[in-house]
Each structure stands twice: as C-alpha cells, then as structure tokens.
Amino acid sequence: MQADPRGVLVGVHFMDGDHACCEGALAAGCRAAFGYPITPSTEVVERIARRLPLVGGIFLQMEDEIASSIAIQGAAWGGMKVLTVSSGPGISLMMEHIGYAAMTETPCVFVNVQRVGPSTGLPTQVAQGDMMQARWGSHGDYEIIAICPNSPQECFDLTVHAFNLSERYRVPVLFMMDESVGHMTERVVIPEPEHLKIETRRAPSGPKEDFLPYEPKENMVPEMPPVGEGYKVHVTGLTHNEKGYPIMSTEVQDKLVRRLVDKIRLQADEICLVEEDRIEDAEIIIVAYGITSRVVLRTLQLARDKGLKVGVFRPVIVWPFPEKRLRELAQQAKLFIVPELNLGQVVLEVERIVGPYAKTVSITHAGGSLHDPEEIVRVIEEEIQ
Image 1 (tube, helix red, strand yellow):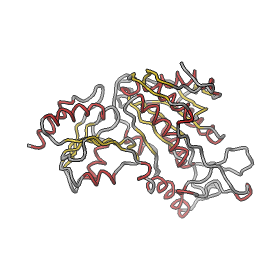
Image 2: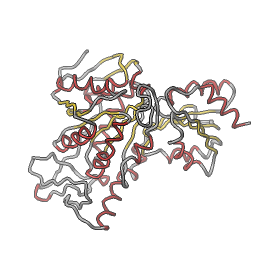
Image 3: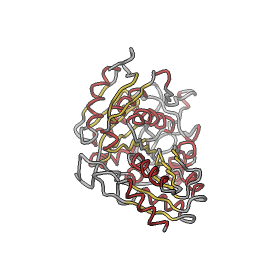
Image 4: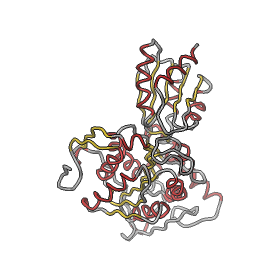
C-alpha cells in the first residue's frame, strides 16, 4: 500500500467498497473504531483494525454490537472522530444507541452494509431492506442523516462526507452501503490529504465558566468541548436543558426535541445530495439509490433506444429526503418508477411527495440478487400503454 508519511493511503488503487470505506474514515480523521465482525461488513472491520494503529488510532473488537455502538460515543466525547460497522441483526441491536447519539448530539458514523433479512436471512447476499429502519429504527422523534454510495469510489468520498456532516450537525450519520457495493472491486482514487475538505467539530469560544453544553449556536447546533478540558459537561439520554441537566417537563421536552429535528429539517436543502441523468426532457423518472442506481443506468439506455423519455433521479443522501427537488420534477414527469431491493420502502416517500401530480409504481425485490434492467423497461412500457 502506498501511504503518505502520516499513514494515510494515497494514489490510485483497486479495492472493494468495504476497504474504500475504511480508507475514507481514516482520511476524514477517524482515530477510534469499535465493532464486532458480521457479514458482509467484516472486511471494513478487518482493514480498519490493521490500519488504525498506523495512523495513531485505536480499534477494539467489542463483545457485541451493543457495546460497540456505545463505546464510540465515549470516544467521541473524548474528542475523537469515531466509527462503528455492522449489518443486519447487528444494526438492529445498535438502534437504542443511535437514538442516544441523536439525543446527546454525539457526532458518530454508523456503517451498515445491508444484507437480506429479516433475522439471519441471507447473510452473504444483497438487499436494501434497512432504509426505513435507518430513519425510524430508534424510538421517539429525532433526525439522522443517511448516505447511500453506489461504488467503491463513493465509499471513500462519501465516508469523508459522512464524517463532515456528523461533525457539522452533531448528529449520527448512517452510511448505508449494501453487499454488492461493499464487495465490488473498482478503481479508487485517493487524493493527497491536503486536497480533501475535512471538517472538525466547533469547539467552545467563550469563557469556560459560562459554557452551556447544549446551548444552540449556528444552525441550532451546540458547541462541543472534549471532556476533561475544564468545561462542565453532563451527558444524558434523559430530556435535558441547555446545561445538560435532566428536566422532567413537557416544555423542555418540546423545546429540545423540536431543535433536534429542526437542525436537520431546516437545513435539508443544504444537506441533500442528488444525481440526475437525462432529466431535462424526462416524462418518466426512475428513482433509485445504492446499487440499484447502477442497474438502472442500463435501463435508461434501453428505454432511450426505444424512444422513451426516461430519466434517472438518484438520492445520494436519502435522509433527509430530497423532497423539494422531487416535487419540482413532479411538475414535468407523469410517471415515477421506484425499483428497490425490498418490498417497498423509499417508494412511500416518493408517493407522498409526487402523489398529487404523477403516478408512482414500485418494483419490489425481496433481495438476494439485483433487478433485471429489461424487466424495469417492461414495467415502464406496460404503464404507458
């Protein structure tokens, strides 16, 4: 491996998505990771366990996923950028701590390499069945950010972006890979560290004696000091005031939870990231994410060859959902096709947004393999007859 003197990999490489995700985390400044091996995410854990000590970091294999998902939060409050990795049943076990990270505003990245479920399912096969779990899996009202890469290159680039968003908004970010993207090997270009945009958390600027750990600042996000540097910090999953102290009142609960939600919802236009292909004249729009957004590129070519005005809309960041742009597209397109490797999840958001203007058709797939591009073309042809 070619590395710069700081131990960060640079240059052109051929690697799979799991390994590229690891390198993206290191490039973003992640120096603490905790995890437990589970297919198909194990390659991330194996590589980061080997690579972190080379850049002055630490990896610990914990006794289970529950321990992993809380250990990263302790390290985050110690001032480190942190990561945990899992899949399927392991992600389900982490849900309570995703809610805890949202409530305590702990910046951290959860990597989910999705596989077929429910339960043990098909551990080595591809699916996209965790999309609604990512958004709603923990209890209560909260907001997270979820990113869906579709290539090893994006596994590097978007992991860096995931850490930046986590630090900027003090929020757990879910990196929603899938088995196909995690295990495919492609060319990955890793730039010199100085060419990457790396964000760090905003440290307190005022007197230590006046510091309030949950006082909202820019974009409703509090400043965050590392524990042990003289600031008074109280971290709790209970409803708390700006001092961090538990307060059992409906007024404080309402104020706190609305801020936790609004700091993401009100910045959605800035956070959302999409890709569009042949949208300008599209009368039929395929909405796809993750590995499925690669499959539908062949569908797009086949459909255009038949004279069908088809375009592809890809939410790269799925949560928050890019509803503003999708609503704009609903003014021009008469049909939205949503292929997913599940029995219908993100399609529910598409229907909600475009329903008053256009028809939405779900192409479901229980997972284990990918959609047939020609099948999607046939569905389009049937719908426009």
